[in-house]
Image 1 (cartoon, rainbow, N blue to C red):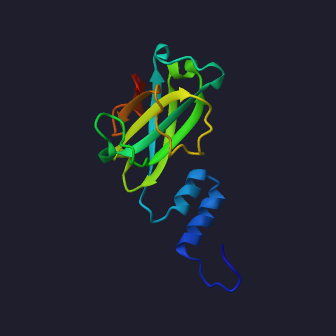
Image 2 (image 1 turned 90 degrees about the horizontal axis):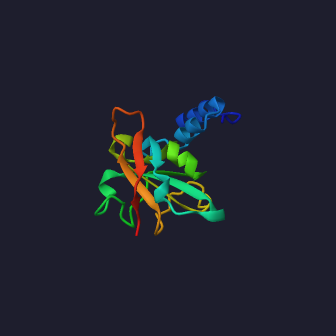
Image 3 (image 1 turned 45 degrees about the horizontal axis):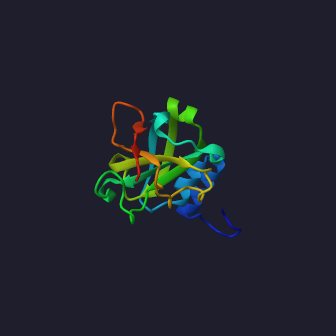
Length: 167
């Protein structure tokens, strides 16, 4: 913001002021991350055959979706233990929602463009009580997961079917 006596505002200050007046959280995110690389948004449609998922009881289910640089994939289709996600999202979910498909947007910041990302999603027992954005989450034993390439396809979203179980 402009202080009394300042003749001109810095570029970052102008962007912050513009973003704040736009009242968009995405604009605020973009304004506060100037110069740190790409801001990417990966759109995914996550679904599963609910018969492959264990009963959660009172715990409920949480869906976690993360995007990773393609180069971070370990052997198989899950990222290595030291791989850092570009972005992540989590939410409480019901099996009925999962059976019909759930749309998820994952916003990330890094050097990798969305077209070069791989999306990993899994469902596990529990409430979405991990850290706010689930960047540190990893699939637990018994979690049902799936992956998809985030490259542009004919579909508007990467299609992920949770059909593999982590042992």
